Image (cartoon, rainbow, N blue to C red; front, side):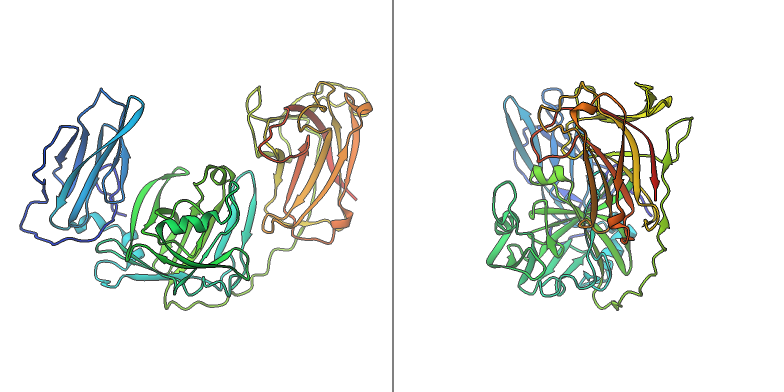
Length: 501
């Protein structure tokens, strides 16, 4: 993949103005220049350095180059692939307010070298595709829409083929045209949108669509959420493509502007909604939209993934995949020795007075019967509303024979169980990560008379033994509660955990 020598990957945006290749690459309009924005033409055609003329007097400013690219710093770089008029904006903090200044820049000819990256070609069909390349949802593939909360929350909902039939989603088309960075969102007059209440505001997302287009009707859909009679306010719409680091890798991010979006509007702002490109080839694209607005949705970590194929590419029904058979689950760990057979992670961690929640093997605080062992597991809970230990597997469980989880626990007397939201409970859950609605839970409440001493607990899942899709265990000390009220932190101990008949 070709890399440009300037530090920032070039992006595309805006329409083309008249092209005059015999002229210089840029032509400053004759307006007064107060020295706050300094533009330096680089040796590379259509590439520039932008300098903050107030360097040292203000903090490093934020730049918007009018081509879909932004940056922060006193000296920043970008390039312009297409001819056009661009408005360079610099925003800096002065006293107790922000100040934005701008300077126009005219690019008089294209530089196609800046868009020679194969990703541009795969997305748009390339410069020879005058009408661009049109993408649609791969509606017959499981997971063509995938709602998830990655990481700690562990919510995964891969929609079945044609799950959204009757919502108006499957006839939507998105066309990307390279020249001029034009996008055409053809929704046949109807779009699909999240319609729930957010932060107390009904139809929050639909109200956002009203900011960038015309909404003439809203009605519930057969798959939940809402069908919206919607027309984007800008025609055509625009797109930009940027590259930055994500999870240690260079990753492309696609931004749609002018009121366009991909199939199901769930987050961010429709003025400029960003999609992370997780995979792209000539006939396949998988993208993800992470909700970044409002803050409550961003904190929840909601993400929506889509699988797209080019219009006209044969969409074939899935060939059923025979899943691996469930395995007989084995858990038998006493936390003695240097290595252990099971590894936990912490979910929904919230800060506590001693730092982040932890789980670690420590010396037994009370070597009394029924647990005289040397080493035990210590769990320090923080203020997260649903903190729990997670034991994930890469297979599903056969619980036909072994379905009772036994462990020894010690709840210290020093925990404030009479305080806010910290309960003297131990809960174990069986979870199907591919179906968030499928969970089995057993909870024990420890009596006050048993605080400060080891007790044996058995979590009986024999009633769920016929379910063969569970693939994760979760253990929770102290209960869960409704946000945003914080809990008292607490310390808990457990040991000798094993699964029996």
